[in-house]
Length: 594
Ligand SMILES: Nc1ncnc2c1ncn2[C@@H]1O[C@H](COP(=O)(O)OP(=O)(O)OP(=O)(O)O)[C@@H](O)[C@H]1O
Ligand SMILES: [Mg+2]
Image 1 (cartoon, rainbow, N blue to C red):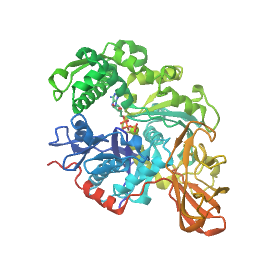
Image 2 (cartoon, rainbow, N blue to C red):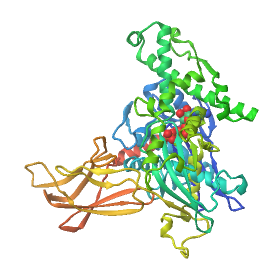
Image 3 (cartoon, rainbow, N blue to C red):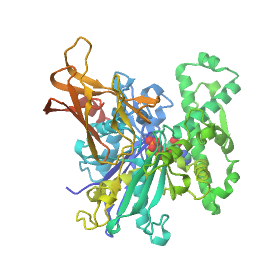
Image 4 (cartoon, rainbow, N blue to C red):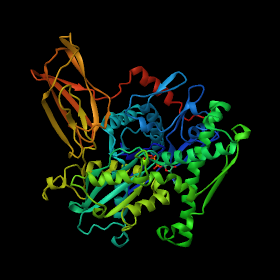
């Protein structure tokens, strides 16, 4: 079978799929596929490069993903699940009808559609291998759950590869640059190493990575991960929410009601609908601003940074949907200046009330780099990715954070760069080397032409709680991958006070800036299930392995018996065979127009 190269960007709000093919000139061409999906009316199929990551389950229990599902958000909000990526890796589920739907299941529906699209592109061929991207700062449980979603959608367990979204976006950028004449390139290496910051602001996550790019051997590229920001749940949906709250306040004034009076007067479904309509309005407003500005910049051939004030007066207006009670339907308008005032809290650290702003992850990435604290001056270029970077005020703010020294590099296609890069990575997997560059000898025969050398690192600290002693680090941020480590003399088998032997024990996992930090986030427990009852107080040895693609596995054995090695479940949810079969049946019905 011919090799097929597929990259999927499983986004909080939108997902995309790209394929990579080799051209006759020997270049890699990556293209984003149009995804067939049910349109807003629910009656016909449309093609769009993005697939909204929204699941709608209709009254008969049939699933829909994409535009129609997103539209149903404003109509039957209790039958849709959106932004599931923010919960992947957690033990949560949403009840719809008879079902309890977990985040992995939502993701599997999205992946299933993208997989089918890629299969159609290649002529109905079955595809079992893929690269799925994840935020750089996802912890291993979030990564593990994403992989489970990949398996639930029909990809082969051993053929699912995962790379961080910023790295994928950078791969796409470098691949395009390579095709250009040196004089036309936006990044020139000239034998030097360059520190690039990838700033990815999508629908739900703000992902900042610092990657050092250098010329590798034989014309290849050397990409070293220098830093990854802390996990920051900040994206377009937070911008939209801020605007929704402000508009709602305005509406209450217009209706002459307090919040209490308002919720007492209207049914819950109407309140939800109003909010969904306001969300729609808020999202359309920012998109309309950025598209209008972009058009004008192009027509007038001017630079935004020198003319930003010119665009303050832009305004956006729209009527609220007629599906609302008549007295709630009204016309709304907002100017760009007002919009920017509302969202400014999300752009400036000092204004930020909930610690959610784009400045903090940038500073965090600079502060905690593998080569010591860095300053904005150490960065040679900032590369923008993610739908929210279309918005000019965001671009302007980044320009400002970097002292107006260099204009951020805009991705050719901020919404597709990640999946495009993932497909290229899939193509290059055979040619990719994960050794760090200093491990490679010039005479290394393994190094073929154009090899991409990656040095990936552990994205965050994970600790195991130990009663009455300091926590033990399972993973330490910045550790160069791959690695393995054996932890001895730190664990003993525990059980309730009267028990002498146990069948299993739990290891409590948490993530934090450091072991002593009071700001910790509890993760799911790891379970060591012994093959036969084990005496309490026996000494336990743990072996941690993390491969180049950051997949973590843990094994355990009793110090006195090294022959019985146990695979430790480090917090993955285990679906029963019955659940998997049921999900597969449901997947057969996705997006079928009735
Ligand atoms: N032209 C535009 N102007 C402003 N914002 C836009 C534009 N187009 C899309 N967006 C916003 O970008 C966000 C989606 O971006 P993207 O598709 O990159 O995110 P995602 O991949 O779903 O999320 P994440 O990467 O955080 O998981 C949405 O909030 C959307 O409203
Ligand atoms: Mg994204």
